[in-house]
Amino acid sequence: MSSIFGEFLNFDYLHFNRVCNGANNKWVWFPKSKNHKLTSMVYTHFNNSVGNHDTWNGWGNLWRLFVAPRPKHFIWLLLHNGIKTYEYLYRLNLGAQTFCKFCNLDFENAEHLFNSCPKTQIVWQQVSNAIGKQIVFHEGFSTGNWLSPDHPEYDLNVQSIIGVTSWLIWKTRCNLIFRQESPDFQSIPIRAINHVREFSQSSNFNSSKQLILSNFSINDGPYLFVASTSHREANTHGAGFHLTNGYSQFVCAGYCNNFAESTLEAKSLALLIALGSLHASDLQVKTIFIACSELFNIIKHGCDPQAWRLNPLILSINDYLSSFDLPRVCIIPKAWMNVANNLAIHGVNSHALTLFHQGKDLPRWLMKQVLKSGISL
Image 1 (cartoon, helix red, strand yellow):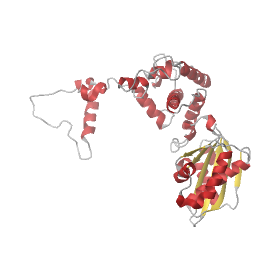
Image 2: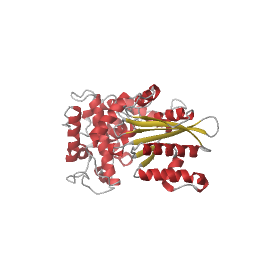
Image 3: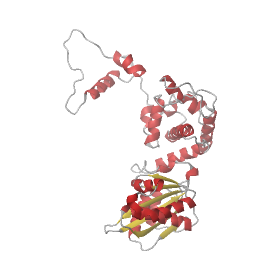
């Protein structure tokens, strides 16, 4: 059994089951119906046999945290000793013992990386100063006691910030190793607190979709969202865009109508109009979000020979991108750009380019949509 399951087999589970050699054979885990699988019956049998011994109430609290699904999954792996630190790979004979890339003072393992590393301790001190509560892991970080629902010092909000901070520390570590990016430890507390605040204030329906900026640092802003939509009539399209800074604050927005012979041409025109409007307003952009993978590939790899008609548009787009010092272009689902999509819908019936700027009066529908998406005015 050990050769099959290794260290993950808990023999306490088997202790509650007996082998009887005198009775006739029977299906202990025979599926109750065609809708039940044999595997699920095995798990059900062992779970019911174990009772309530060796349980921890922190697991239920994990899924209640005010964080996105990805950090929750990371915390779950972390507390199961499943994240691929150098120590984890060493145990699997996949590498040598390696020093922590942050401090280069001790071998890297989960406890060192998230608790005892000097660089990490600075991060926790900054988080403590930001929330006004001292964060110290007296019993260790990887034990998970900080996640207990009856913790005397940490409520659910603080536990959420701790969880997201650990996730951002891990992302910073991976970016240092695989992308050679210099760690920005000072931005981690701000990003963690903003992540929890945005998630806790957003609706359940849009919570995971409103956290795009949590995957970027403040230095990656301003952010430009560009969308395009089509009218029932042929060749009639609407373009919409909005710009936010690194703190998720509204900077400007706009919409207009344009005529194009294809959806790709309409989306190219939408991006061109957005970049031209920012350039005319003397605004900057560092990260651009679009929903068209075909347009993204053309920008990155050049115009497709079959789309030769778009050459002038793509050349103009590249000229604007060069004037903005080549901002990063990212693809995201269209559903993640509610504000830009609504602006594009209004642009279908617009006869001229309409712009909205920070500090100016905004239409009520736009204010509601902006605030609903977690963007502050």
